[in-house]
Length: 309
Image 1 (tube, one colour):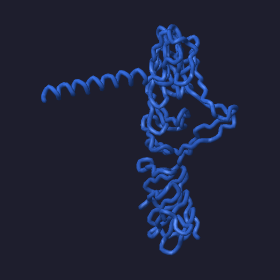
Image 2 (cartoon, rainbow, N blue to C red):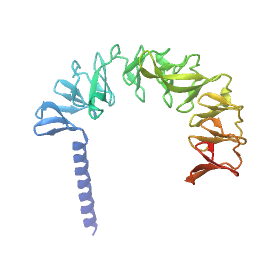
Image 3 (tube, helix red, strand yellow):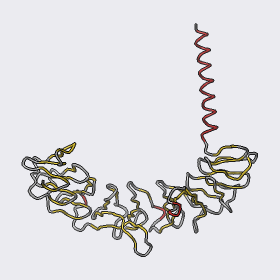
Image 4 (cartoon, rainbow, N blue to C red):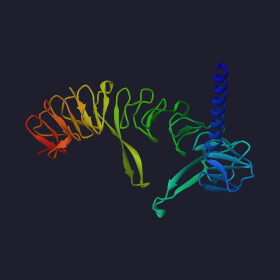
């Protein structure tokens, strides 16, 4: 019986090894098919007899050529090229960034590849941070796009898309004017603060570039020490409630977000930052699921989307 268990243990070990071997072989999206190399379902235009080394799940060395997905990086030095992650790579003299996009000309149905050198990037000092950010000796990068920061050496990535160096705080790639980098911290996806100020961030259309950019509301008079985010655009400090960066004339006492739209404190009920006239905060409750066309109620009335029925 003991020999039987030993034999079964050896058999299971062999099966596990074979499963691991086959899993490793087929895990890479670079594979051979019909005498050619493929990335997923896309041909590389390279014979299967050509040596290919997958550097990770996106970059590969094919003889003396470098590929990102199924697209060759022309000019890359194969001998010194290293993949840094699924988007960034570098060789002895250049840094490269690759990603995919969809074009409205084909109704966004086709995933296209773009990859190439990052103009001006210093390969020798280039290093990844996280969440698409990187730095070199001169500047910072976000998803392959360079942007200026005050002090590269101290630049770091915070949560929720905020970053900082020892001098300033940043939202994505935009410097927050007047911020103190040393005390700057992210609160949630919309709010950040330093020792004396708080900011609400939002996306705005830039008329010059016709692209979306991060803009900020400098929240004058906020008590930064007690300022906290409450989700869904709401925040409070020791004195006031805020919605999307603007103060609401109501108390922070007992404040709570009920849904992304409804919130209340001990005296008022709010709907997207607006007081609901006459609503009784003490008895106000959500109706889940909605009842008779109402999504909330208090002791005397019913409400739909912030309006009394």
